[in-house]
Image (tube, rainbow over the protein chains, first blue to last red):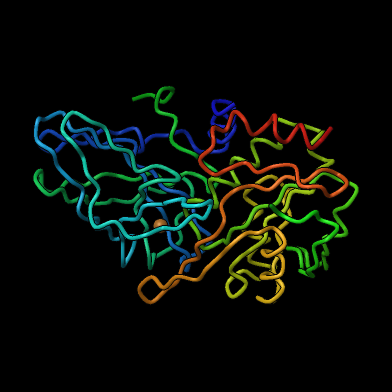
Length: 157
Length: 161
Ligand SMILES: [Cu+2]
């Protein structure tokens, strides 16, 4: 069912291009960077990405910076007793040998104070700062508000 | 457990400006969730899932009342809800109104919400599950936020019977 839903959502979004680019810094690979279109600039945007640590040292994502938002933050959606909240995350662990996803319903970048509305098909840079590996800048693709992720398997890489 | 819809009391306004009371839902199965348009993570994901379910159900979904109740009436006017919902399945209705009425609605569903400061802004903690009711208004289950989405459609089909 999930696949069906995903397929429906993806049919509504532009062919994934930027979201399928891969960026590396040290032992880390950063890919599938995407965001959702926003209604105006008054509401926050969101930032999702996947980080793979191929090394044997644990690392952590400790910050975001982007010209697209005045106050980008790391958040984690937590559901406790059925109630969803979004506390600030000081850092997101990227353990050795593992892949960590900032994905709907879990960790996410929260892009507060957007400089302009995010429109489907646009892209913008986000610089991720890791505790050990340092900084890497990725292109983030804006998908529709309805998107659940980029379709990279089927995109021309 | 949520009250049967027939025992709920509140008056809200939908995203087209129409007054809605729970008694209006009796006669059709109902799917209700709480959210707010300022929320970039949980709410679009839930709306996207629900839109997918409605599409999978096809014409059967026309028999459902599918309702988003805003927990953030300060920012969610009917117009704001209309613009937001235009991104999702057109069968989803958005409700907003005075805070006191939203509190009455949440009480009937045994749902909770709370305003939380976030820097100079605020966000809303809120019950994230999707409530299901049978056509006669009896409670028919909840689709929890982190529940395997494969169980969602059978649960909705059960209240459609
Ligand atoms: Cu957030």
